[in-house]
Length: 322
Image (cartoon, rainbow, N blue to C red):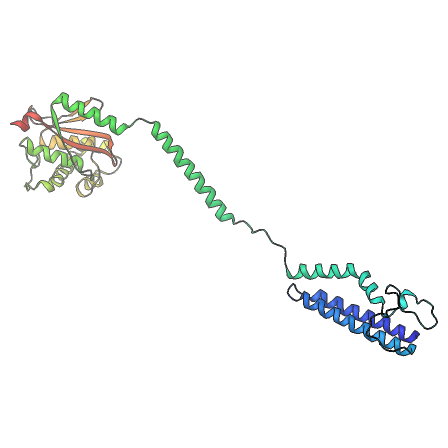
């Protein structure tokens, strides 16, 4: 009996070790099957121990269930009716073993769960996307602020146009629109020269020109460039680059014209140029010749056109009516 009980205890320990390993390696999907398998192994070992005890005690083998007359809560007794120590109980002690290892089973289940179902992780924020979103928000705020500030500013374009129209009435002038393409000063002058009968051939250094008005600005550019080159002492001190380079730009590019070019045009063609501004000021560029009647009018804008400064041609209403 002692040898049998010692073997039963060893088999119980071995089985419990196997069950623990199986439950540790179980996954969430296989846990139910593993639990069923472990319960089956315990039941088979229990039945085996019951049969061996019954055989050594001379009693018939049973299926492991207690007799009807036996107290179900009473453990099996050896033939001498002496109770067996708890550690010596080979069969009925399975339930006690399960109870004592209940905490271990729960911990193994938790271990398996922790191995198979990782805890949810918070998604790492994308710093670049956050930086781009922050920059876009800042730009949007700046644009909104700029729009608000612009709404509170006076409409300079509208004010300038209204002031110019008032000047046209006072001087009895009619405006002629010139395309804002960089050649506006020269195109406006070319249109006016033909109106007053001067033509596109300059009084100084005259050249043979075509009367094609679409190319008139090129001839006025050439006349201004030639005059500045022939009178270098009058223009070179006011330039920030060599005179030859400057006059080449006037002749061959769409660089804007200004005060120096107006002087060269006036003196080259022998006409006085009146530049009317929205402030009411009329800037007069004299030709240096005592012609008296040869003069042209230009409208000078600072804000009306989106490209910046612009010149339009002006004609006298009296000249139009005649």
